Length: 368
Image (cartoon, rainbow, N blue to C red; front, side, top):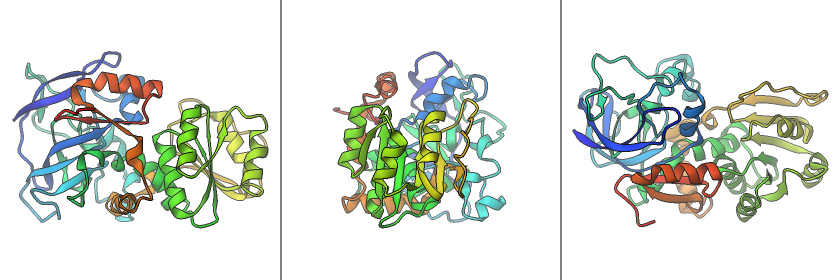
C-alpha cells in the first residue's frame, strides 16, 4: 500500500512529506493502524543530535494514535479491527523486566526503539525510488498516514474520545505523569518540585494536582510558569536568587520528591539541595554531559535515579490518564496545538522555539 509519510533523510535537513510504500501485511502479533494524530516529542528531534546512531532515512514519530484497520493471524492480542488505540514504546515481552511489569527497562529497549528494530528479510517501508526507509522508530514510525506496529505497543481506548489528540499519552505525558503516579506514588500532602515546565513537566504538574500533592514548578519562561500555575503548581522562576531556600520554604522544609526534565547540572544540584532527608530526585531527560554533584547533595539519605517512560505499563497508565481527563483532572488537551502533516517543519520550529508545548500532527489535515 502507498501513503504519505514525513521522511527525515539527513540529520541536518528538514522533513519531506512524500509517498512511501508498505510492503508487508500484519504478521502474527501485529496490527495496521490508520494514524489519526501523532505527537511530536523532543526524542524525535533529538535524532538530529545523535548523528550515526539512529538509521536514516527514516520515518520517525512515536506518539501515534488511530484506528485499527487489520490484524495479523495468530493468538488473540485483545486488539481488533475498528478499535481506537494509543501507540506506545516497543518491548520484547519476554525478558526479566518485561515479565516484571517494567517494559520500559526491556533488555532490548534501545535496539527495538532507537537503533533499527527487528531484523527483516526485505524492507517493509520504502521510498518512491524503492530505497529502504527505517520503519520501526519506537515500533511505530507514526509520522505517517498508516503504521504497522506490534499489538503489544497498542492500548485500546474509549472510542468516544478524540483519538487524534491521545497520542502524546503514549510517551511524553506518560513519562511526566508516570513519574509522579508510579515512581513517587505521590499522594495527598506530599511535596514535589518539577524542574522544567515543558510537556513532560506540565504532565507531572497535572498528575500531582490530581493526586493531591503540593507542587512547585521551576522554569525560565514566564508563559510556561503561567501554565504550571493554571494547573495547580506554585511557579518559581529558575533564575530566582535563593532558589533552594525558596523551594524549601514553599514545601515546609524541603520537597519529598523532585523531577528534573532539563538535564541542567546546576538545576539538578539545586533540586537535590531542596530535598528533605530521604528525598528522591528522578531524572527523565538524557544527560549529554557529565553531571558533577556538589558536596552534600546526597547526604541524609537523599537519592537520585533515572526514570524511563514514567515507570509505566502503558496498558495500565494510559486508561487511568484518559479517565482523569474525562473527569477534568488531567487537562492535557490544553497543551496541544494541531498541525497538518504537511506542516511538520513548522511544528518542529515552533516546538524548538517554545511557541507550542505539544505539537500534534494530523495526517488527514487540520483547520488549525
